[in-house]
Amino acid sequence: MKKILSAFLLLYFTFAFSQEKKPMFWQDIQNFKKADQENPPPKDAILLLGSSSFTKWTDVSDYFPDKVIINRGFGGSRLTDLNDFADDLLAPYQPKQIIIYCGENDFADNHKLKAQKLVNRYKEFYTKIRARFPNIEVDFISIKYSPSREKLWPQMKTANKKIAAFMKKEPNAEFIDVTKAMEDASGKVRKDIFVEDMLHFKPEGYQIWTKVIYPYLK
Image (tube, rainbow, N blue to C red; front, side, top):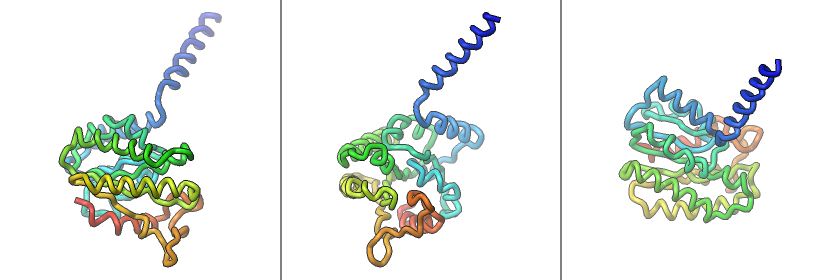
């Protein structure tokens, strides 16, 4: 009986230790790998990378029926996570364009995060993309001003401005500004396009994004 108990405890602690060592979002990456095994990703697609605004856009291909889209957004992710998993997010694909939406969660995770530090995180990821894909189109969607995160808007606005300036100087790169399109006639962020959490979109929000994003798609 003691041997059985000892064996059980050994297995338990081995499993617990292995679980502790796995980084956040490890399972999301494994799910992507499984999806790629079951359905090999097409070449020359448009690759979406980022956080939950992409994750929850599960029917994104319906919004762009004439485009081939690979959606690899994982909810809650930050630019730090894109950097940590850069090889896993980039190596399996041969896209003609990469579109990124990320950064909102970086500020939510650390309310004292300086805009420049977030910009540096983005530049690091951009550099990793360019090391693998020097000539494809790379676009960054502006950090949206979610009503539930209004306290963080000043940092977000500064970060958007700095990333826009950076992208303007880069070849085959665009800053896709969705902020104006999400405002009402008085210049305030429309709350009716968000679900109850005032963070994620209703279909109306994605319809707005579609109109803004489509002209940039290859």
